[in-house]
Image 1 (spheres, chains in turn purple, green):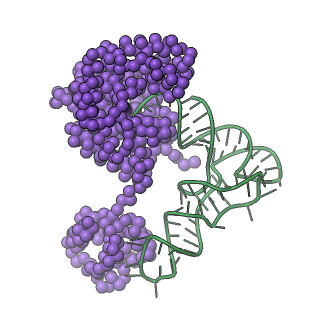
Image 2 (cartoon, protein in one colour):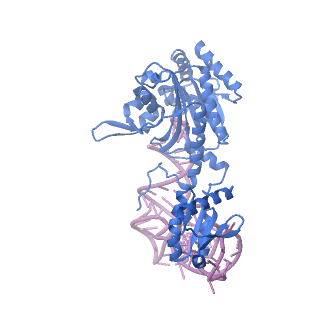
Image 3 (cartoon, rainbow, N blue to C red):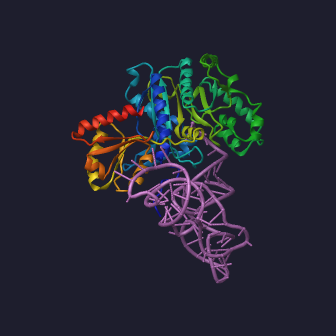
Length: 426
RNA sequence: GUGAGCGUAGCUCAGCUGGUGGUAGCACCGGGUUGUGGCCUCGGAGGUCGUGGGUUCAAGUCCCAUCGCUCACCCCA
């Protein structure tokens, strides 16, 4: 049996890679416009980092992390998300000393040991953004606006849902009210909700069971229990989004799966990915930096799932972009091949995307290869040309051909041909 | 961790109630055009029918097991 990739680990093949480059390129461009700087952090961290940030009792930490002991017996974990590692680096290098408000983004693989399905892998990739050092509500809107703009520039259709989870002052009161509400309905809920009622009561609200949802119509809303500070904060976020003409829906049932979120949370939702609805999601995490041993600084961030973006892009445009090239050299026979070899390299050095057949196939076959490589021109060198010291330059678009003399001075010849081809192409 | 569906050529798939693996489409290689790509046409190569066992004169087809994939639950980007 051949060795295959691990379950939930995928190769990203050449015909898909164009989508990845498009997403990453667009993201970098937009993030830079908003003043974000890239940070690259390790994939492997001490297990403790994730336990402390994401929350000991969350599913991610409890049963989804790739955790193992290294050769010294230290417990390490492959990062299941990006925020914790970025914050660790932020604290470790005292980045707040350089600039009061830091805007950071990172791109890379994350790991969660889940059962794979559509839009969900064990190794998946996220674009992850964090702003540290400000608790201003307009910043929340700015961050949401950036995510929204990225989605829009990619041409993807999603809807935006926002909510406020309150703060350590008001959330516990709401939680009590909710627990009491659920207690009254004990026995009428699905098994999962019965379980969640005790472990993580807020999570019952986004249960998919229709019967449960019927019950929750009458459930207390977090938005009716916000303290005045949170109320005002959320008000400004909504007002700012409206100002930017970003359409949103308030979903008071939206709860995030990581413990560190407070106040503003948001999700970018699609119905085109089967069971997976969130393409991007994030929120405010004002206590997290301090919780990880750093200064008392507020923060907000979000992550977008790159595989999910790729799936959406693929659904929209059923085209794998074929990489084009500038020139293909069809050299017939050993003599011509020998002559063409340094020419090929010379053209590449001067900047052309050039290719050539090395199998010694027929001209017809080589023309076919040129066509397949999407070459703008083909340079044909055969026996006749060889003896006349010329080559035929064929424009693959309009099929026009011309004779050009073979190089005496290779470097100069290559430069001239390169110039000619690049100007002719556009 | 739970449940369902599916494994036949590089890819997408035919294969009826068991009776010699498909002229199938796309892709690939070659010829038609003794030196010119896309279109057309002719030909070629390519398979341990996921794996192992069982029933049978005979299994891609039926049964069991196993591995893999997919989708859904859970959870999440």
